[in-house]
Image: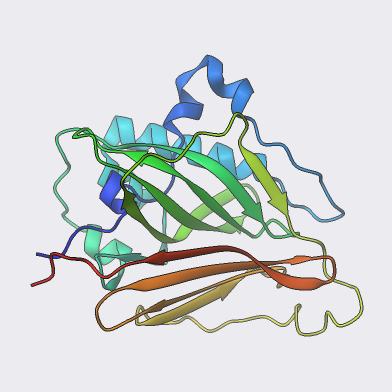
Amino acid sequence: MNRPPARVLAAVAGGLALFALAAGPADARRRPEYAPGNGTANPSALVAAEIAFARTAREKGQWKAFDEFADDEAVMFVPEPVRAKEWLSGRKEPAAPVQWQAHQVWMSCDGTMGVTKGAWQQPDGTVGYFTTIWQQRKKGDYRWVLDQGDALAQPLKEPEMLSASVADCAGGPGDELLVERDREKTAPGMDGRGRSKDGTLTWRYHVEADHSRWLAVSMKKNGAMTEVLRSEVAAPKDRN
């Protein structure tokens, strides 16, 4: 049997809600720190969206929340890439929800796209990590467009402070290609990609025939696109 998607394995945990952030007094300790630039990026708005996502998961069910906060074109891995809304349709809710916490946030200069990475914990003691990509539909309104992750032998070390990094703004020499719009809507397949409206944050994934995969995120820093995150997931051992 194919294993479930791996932050979806947590929630079966996808989408990125901040149960820890929503819990209470620890909120102040985990507010993101970042140096704002000249753009309109606001990582705190993305964190707020995640808190709302978590609240919905607790109050309405985790799959209901995943569906409600997913973009129409959102992709998850089960382990093959699938349209999230199709996979979630009619999905039975688990007896107990997964918990997860964001540790890092990356955001484009214009705030139209963000990426979050963090840890998840299942009620049975299984732990892992997730990476979720969020896209802004309108100001302050984010929906996730890609969710993935994997189980880990040991839990991720929780940072003292949720960290956030904002891309440099476009406009310098050689930025012409960065501001081109990537309007292609890639079907869920073995390859996928996306970018922010200003081109300062991009992502790509590739899935092999055995369902191993990688995800890479790049953002503009010091005048060049720099890879800031790479996640590699091994082929599932329990394939049919």
